[in-house]
Image (cartoon, rainbow, N blue to C red; front, side, top):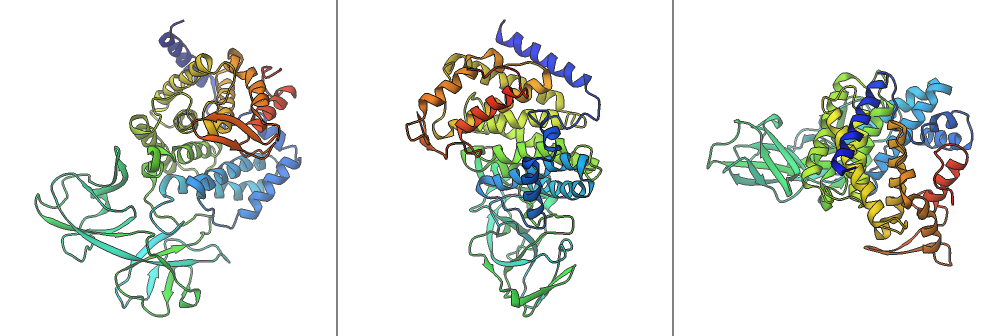
Length: 481
């Protein structure tokens, strides 16, 4: 069967499968599909997940490397929420609020550009001591305050875009050197990348400086930001008050967790959050993480129609940008492609299909991207050998997960159609050195070293855990050797 015809057939299968689902069939994205059932039995895996979620409930979640801290925490809380709905409704309410708070982080904030997890609340003038807080802090939670220098730069208007020298928070754009907010944020947008160009201010409508006129941009970032000593300020539920007015020309940022576990943040994320490096390195964290949370919290009343609209609009925009400019957007086996683009497209398609007018479009896109990976595994890696150097473990795990999810959604077992699936076991065994730790993949990024049996990326753990699952009846029979 020709590839184009096969993709069409798969797309039709996908659309029919979705039509057969009732409106309340979320979650869809859990693979294996019985994971919630198993955790709800209350064994050690549930105890470990529950304890981790309880311990971090009142804590700010940090982005860690490339936003993985935010994504991993969201996925843990979303999964724990689904389990707790069955066995612990008190915890379920808390876990749901925490997961929703982290969805807002992935949709709105950036891990670069400002002090970490910090929110801008005002501009110092040398006399003001009191600044309004954006939301009430959680009782007993700590607050950290930062002062960041504001850089004001002049520009001459000559068109819809202007490159800026740094990434950060635009405090104001004005017609005078004070850079007061003469132009509201609804008139402009600051993008980490505009296409491929970096740090681009884009004017969005007819409200902008006259052609040839000079204007001024005030920007604050994490460069040279200082942490204010805790004895230099106090706060109530609504106000931060300095004991002495800070020197003029600084941006005030605060970091704390709110009453519904909502974290402070810089509001310069969205599409910009997936764009650094690569380009598009962080597509692997922000897009799939947000979509996964959307699916597992789909029926939570706190996930309002307004939030659903905000979230799926952001997801759509991430996919649009990455599909044109992202590294490996035209690929098949790379970790950017599978973990970012393919997983992001599939998660978005099925998580948001009930509300998103572009849901069917992304289901078709998912089928097309999945076919690319299937063909590459079939044509180039039937022996199961490591495809991408130090990223081999993650790519192998992602392939197993995404094809297993595809089977859960559509009923089509594509892993069973690949020589790669069974041969991966042999390849891992023969590719592991006698120390039983080092995997000699010799791919494009060197040699990978992971603790044998690690659940955090080891290709050995990925393959053998999947094998163990199918032996216990949790997956179709395939990885038997």
